[in-house]
Image (cartoon, rainbow, N blue to C red; front, side, top):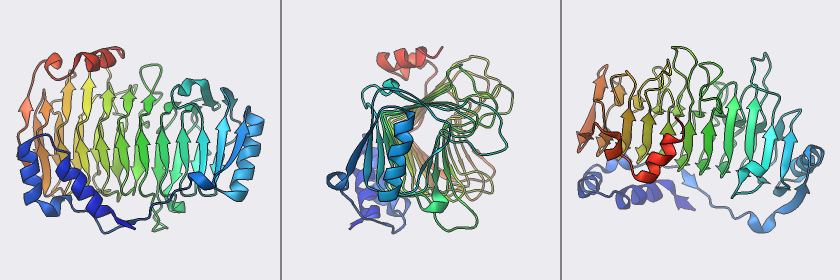
Length: 375
């Protein structure tokens, strides 16, 4: 049994690269301490049953067996799996395993991006300890993946995957007003989220859209072209809101998305957590809904640290913090080409932030090559 608050405190204090940050954290203990949730570690690897699937028929058969028993790895052979119905995960510790070095070899393909009256996800998760590794998911009528917080689907892991082209948000974490359950302690790592045509099918799209989620880590992913085709901005590349708390968004690269990272929304707050060392770049590419890079809206005790934001479009601000409920926020050592702006009575500590007009002074040559590949 490990206290999450102790883990997080050590992580935040030890990570910062600048002495001013380390000194500030030691004097702002209340800002970094998390709610007293408890994490129970579980090693499931040694007890997993392994089933192989080589086409869509054997995949559905394997999932039926896995849902009957739980604790099952479904090993997928290379190929295109054209899904005719949602893969529903209803038992704990089910893992779908493709190729972590080349997720393009295993593709889950839905029936296309289109408006629907019913829900059509590629994967819906209603159980704990689900894992998806090394798979490309594409072409969904709603979401590629929906994690059901109302079903208490804790500890999901999505890594080394490509999520592209859905009619709504690519990864949805849902919750319900009729349930106190939420999805807690998820991990999304080393994935790519994108719209392959350079723009989305409508404004109601997003990358990761998480309601009520607690203790999630979103680490080292790339988000591209999550952009609306009209002047209503798309949802965020990464958005934690509607009761979300204590989430960490770190080391991601966000390219040409209408909005980068958001914690909270007016009337649907978030709290605590941190946005650390992300790179957000938007070219002047005429995306009509282009908007802010990072925003806190009714998100108290949240940290925005060591991020780089470069926006070449006309929106005036790189980072915003809004509404009187946003208190005790810390915005430290960020580099932007546009202002960091307070709005609607929010309060925050701003330390060590700087402005840089030239993109080449914000990024490394490798990063410049990565973001230029989207132009």
